[in-house]
Structures are given as C-alpha cells and as structure tokens.
Image (tube, rainbow, N blue to C red; front, top):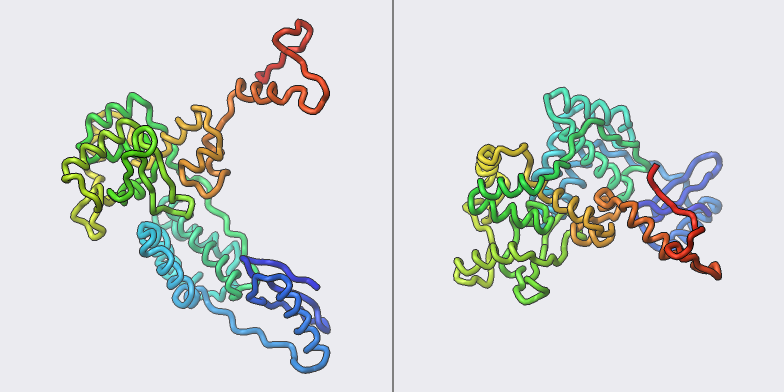
Length: 368
C-alpha cells in the first residue's frame, strides 16, 4: 500500500493495468486512508468500478474567485485586516490582471510561468519586494490547491533576488533625536515599538482592556492580533512605556475599554497613513538616516539578541512563528560558547579538568 500525507490529508497512489491511480482520501487518519485504498483496489479487481475520469482542472482565475479569495477573506478580513488588504487582496488583483497566468489551468502553471509573472510585475516599475509579495500569494494559492485536492503537485516558486529588507538598526543617539523631534503621538508609539518589539499594526490596535497595571514590575500589555497565532502574547512594560500609557490613561479619565490610539479612520484607531507626515517631519528635524517605523521593532530585537537572549525566548517575545526567524538576531559570543563548553566539561567521562588551576591544560581560543 502506498499512502502519503499532503497538507494534513492522506492520498493514495498505485498502478492498475499500466494506469496511475492517484486520489485524495480527504481523511487525516492513516488507517481509514489505507482502508479506502484497499477498497478502491478491490472494486477495480471485481470490475465494480472502472478507472475514474479525471475531473476538469480549474483555471487559476476560477480558483481565485471560487476557492481562494473566499477563504482568505473569511480568515483575515476581521482578524487581521492589514494582512487581507495589503497582502492577499493586492496579490489577488495582480494575479487576476495578468491574463497569461490567470487563464492557465492549475496543472499548467510552471516555475517558468511564475518567473514571467514576476518579471512582468517588475517591468511595471515596481520594487522587487512588491513582485515577491505577489509570488508569495501565488505560492500560497497553489499550496492550498494541492491541499484541497484541486492539484496533484505544485511547481517551485522562487522569489526574485535583490529584495531590500527593513534591517536598519537605529542607534541610541538617533533614537533620542528622533523621539525629541517627533509629535507627542508619534514619540509615544515609537517608544512602545522600540521598547517592546511589537509590530506597528499590533501597537496601533492596542486597547485599554489589554493593559494590566499590577502584573510584573511595571505592568503588562496583551497583544491580541497579529500575523500569526504566535503573535498573541503578553509583554512586560518598561518604566517609560508604563509612564506613557499611564499618562495617556489618566487623560482619558482612566478608561476601562476602547482604543489606546483613537483616530478618525474607518477602523477607529491610528493607521500607518495617520503617521506618515509626522514621521517624515521627525526624520527631517532630527537629521537622522531615514528609516521606516518597522525598523524600531528590528532595532529592539537586535538589541535583545545582543544582550544574550536565546532564540526561543526571543521568539516568544517577538511573536515569531518559527525559531529560525529569531535565530537571525542571536549570535553567541566567543565567551558564551566557551562558557557552555566548560559547563559540559567532564560530563559522563568520569573525570573533569579544572582549566583554571591546571598549568598544563591547553588553552582554547575560537579566534582565528
């Protein structure tokens, strides 16, 4: 029997009179999947069923309209509006508008076709990061097509090289000058970002119900919305974060609920567009190297990694869904490596060497 799992669902595959039979069981239980494969084999042997005709494969445009867009909208429109509006909706629009790709059947899409789509996006004068964003939507779409049984396998979708990442680390001097030059609202939000490592959209959506003044040393705040499930987390407040929020809370009459950063927008709270002009003005007045607000999160995580924080703790604080992402910020020093090795010295060997007291013990150095 040959069953295999794809996207949480078992499939079976076998040869019958020279014809490849491959079908999804739509089951997550391997025992049931084996039983279904055996039943199909038996029915073929008895002549009770013939080789089933393959159902027609949907075009990419049809899959967008009938399957993928309803799923993306239902999953992200309310829980993470920014993900839906700025990522999925924009990507879907780009894919639909490129007819050479949208008109293809799902099984006709190849790596070459995806690369042509990315090249077309870049030829429109768009940044590499924008073209890659559309490719990520396409890749997610094809993965779900496989998982939902509309496609047997998907091509490799490679992102274009040369994407600029938001990896600028703001120095302490730049931070100080920027906060002084910024408006009260901008400086308050920027301080939260650089002291907690929240994503900007997580900060914008903070509510008074998420603030607890009595937990820990300075209180805690609860992040309830984010890009992934891991984004929901509790973060401790630093003294200056507490001072900012407490001052704002008292000015609102010690509100028990509502947005911390209310604004006259459709969402009712501050949005990225609310701070664009203030951010540009603060950069100009401070005379610092231009950066985006997301760089403050990167700055916090870089400082946290340099402080000796391990990748697992950093992932918990940052709300990363994978420790591999957090690993970019963690770079163990030579002293940390030697300290770890010395703690292991003599473990299960029946002896230990005191490197400090022994005059004959070799001296190790990781430096070249």
